[in-house]
Structure formats: C-alpha cells, structure tokens
Length: 80
Image (cartoon, rainbow, N blue to C red; front, side, top):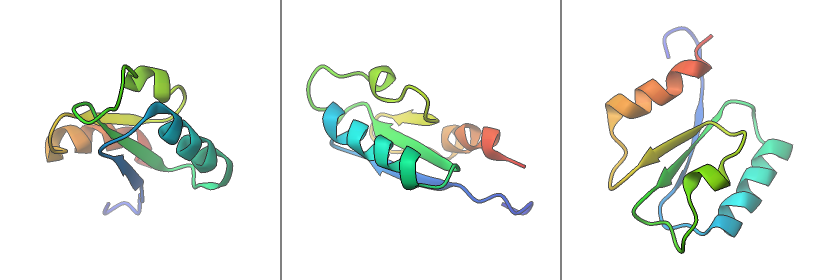
C-alpha cells in the first residue's frame, strides 16, 4: 500500500482441516504477523468449516475466485 503496509496472503484452494491447521501453526510460530489466510469455501474437503480452522488468524473466505473488493476490505485491519 502507499502508506508502506505490507500483508502476505496465504491461499488455500482445495484443503483439509488438518493441513490448514498445521500450516496455521507454522505461520503463528515462524511467520510474520501480517498474514491473511484465504480459504475456498467450495473446495473444502470434508465437513470442516472455515470457522473451526481459523480461530485467531485473520481470514478471508471466497467461493470460486477471490474478489478484489472483499479482499481489500479483509486487508483493512492491517493498515498502519
């Protein structure tokens, strides 16, 4: 962003809860604090819900394709 804000985006298309939980644990432990996780609602494997996966991590949910407007809104809390 123009103000110097930098946010990393971790996207999961086809995902299983266990795989996402392992990745989130790794991000919390070793990743930068400015990460937004995007999860495809259409490609979730099994009965898992995004709410169960992302307890304390900023989350952007999308169906088929991430959309610029909602994605930009999800990035707002990161602005300096």
